[in-house]
Length: 280
Length: 174
Image (tube, rainbow over the protein chains, first blue to last red):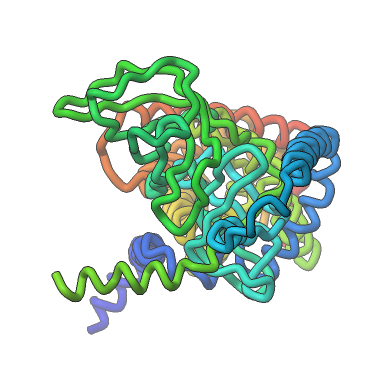
């Protein structure tokens, strides 16, 4: 017994090392199950408040640029408004279906208070949480592209799994005519400006500079949001599908404001689709 | 003694803020990232007991993890780093010195000792960090490349910090 004790004392550094290292690794492995990490992550109030402060300084640097983006968006919206008022609404009775459809999505504006683009798994933190009606798995967009999906929500903050994350997949279509579909992933890129669209059927003709839009098949993103432009088409993976490399329209390094998309009919759609599984 | 504790707390706060507010946003994609916060652990007083060192390193790692959203990764790297620190001190520092509470800094230990200490520590810390983060030996060339580049980046920053705070023989006899 005494010898055992001496042995433990003599090599105490090694045993402490084993103990602490194993507990760190246990933390890492548990953390892979992202939901369990809610104790220490950016949703945490202390860290969130800290980032809000740091970010209030950072926002000044991008003020000019975000102003320009907002102005451009404003101009576009004004243009659409003009088009709408030009239509003679007395000519035919209002079509209630299309009104229902156009107000199907609600958008919430939020400021980005923490952002990363240099890591393998990139996350974004925003200053809106469950008190503002943000829920898990909602889509996040900017005025000129897609950003990602909501991962965790606390009462005042939420974290977003960015498109620059290996697990993010977004359904997209080539061109607004929606003749071909693929899934948008970051792929094995290390650059935040580029991403890949996988599994496009081989027979579809593509050209460089062709725009890519969201398909609207999931409840996360409305149809027809521009995602990027094709920059490289001839990546063949074998089989009857091919991949393309696209230049993203979202500028992840300069993200300051994002919109969270809330699909009002998401629950209804899910419930209806769940019936298929029950019967099958 | 009180002075040493206060100095270490200030060092912890300054390096932590620099790391998470400034250096987190600077990097060459995922290839080169600097982590000079390891100075917090490297410059702890020599005479601390092993358990104290491990607890402090673990907590430092967890604080960094909280800001990096990477629970446990930095903690693991810091624990490995402190194990190396204990080993290195045991074989290079004389016994009477080992009981003192001097800071193992450039001014106290000389360039040759300090340089070796920093270089090896950075290599150990970054290797563990990147391997735990990536969690596979797949694509090992790229991992090794990022370890090498990040180590260089960190090394340069740590030497800049050490030069800025350099003063010779500031021994506290306690």
